[in-house]
Amino acid sequence: MHTILIKNGLLVDPGSGTLREEDLLVKDGMIAGRGAYSGEMADRVIDASGLAVLPGLVDLHVHLRDPGQEYKEDVRTGALAAARGGVTSLFAMPNTAPPVDSVETYRYVTDKAAHVSPVRVYQSATLTLGMKNEALTDMRALAAAGVKGFTEDGKSVMNASLLRDAMILAKELGLPVMEHCEDITMVRGGVMNDDANAQRLGLPGISNAVEDVIVARDCILARETGAHLHLQHCSTAGSVRIVRAAKALGVDVSAEVCPHHFAMTSDEIPGDDANYKMNPPLRTKEDAEALIEGLADGTIDCISTDHAPHGAEEKKRGFRGSPFGIVGLETSAALTYTALVRTGRISLLQMAEKMSRNPAAILGIPGGTLAEGSPADLAVFDFVRPYRIDPEQFVSKGKNTPFGGKEVYGSCRYTIAGGRIIYEADR
Ligand code: DOR
Ligand code: ZN
Image (tube, protein in one colour):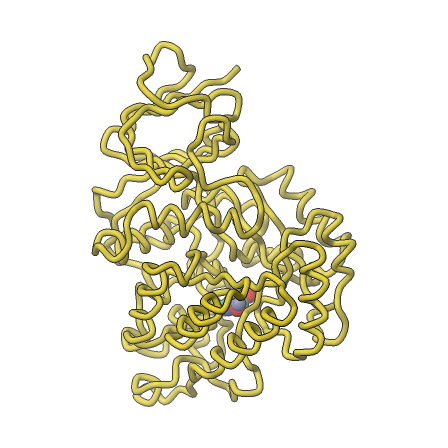
């Protein structure tokens, strides 16, 4: 029997909607109780005075790059980065090499994760075979193997008829269809947001409509099929408006945003530096403001990272020559706390809802609660002492972030998964 006592922490529990300073007792992998306990009864006591205890974060959008691109990341390094960020469950994207479009490839990742990952890895599967937009994967077999959601992330399913078929099947299977929203026919070589800064830098732009038309199309298809549509990395004011309207009509739609899309804007891109390049791109202040309003009023359900590690060499080739994507697992809580909670835009409880409770509910997995009897997946944060983000300290193989040097609040001090301490900060 292994017991951990977390003493005097501020328990932030989106499960019950409460914030309270209390001790929390972990026993045999579960939350065994809350209240006042004596330290003698535990194998390990964590003094959490001045710290906040959240349910472990659940990240719906992570690129582990395994199989096939392990020089960027692999299951183990991605999972260790998650642990360092307070993430105890992650949903891995299937745009690997080969893509996860078969039960065999799905099992390769989940078997590997069972051996090397300290966090819970849920592997997604693609909607179409080989991500070719021609034929659907065997969604039924993948669901039977344990897949919790389907996505073509990196692309949209441009064939609306095929996506409609996929939604009908997903509805039957009780699983979400998750979409990266990008009308590829409208991109025309764009590499950053289409605005004055793109003109200054002489770079081709990506308009908001590239995203918005797919968001609208997919909400229409979700309405018709009754499927659960989850919109990935929403970045535009238009997306927020469309999702708000669709929810009002009763469409089963949920949406996520990424910290970089509300914590940074396109006008902050200083030059031709691909650490600022991701898809969808950094947008305008008006867009970021709309995302924040959407988070605050419940239109946007979750915050996920789109953790997209790339090699340092690949990212040296400027906006035109580099792949899209930035890492996020080790900065998401701090960026969110600093940009949204510290500024009073959302509460700490809302942060825990968006980063733990809601994403767990969308996948139908455990998490997002500090209730007695729940799995002991926890993250203990220091939200008081500021620090500077240092990409060289990342345990992810990817150091590609535009936030290096930024002062933030919200360092993860301990991460506990299944009742085991899987990460502990040095200081
Ligand atoms: O920036 C991105 N990177 N956006 C995506 O949709 C895909 C991702 C990747 O796989 O690198
Ligand atoms: Zn994507």
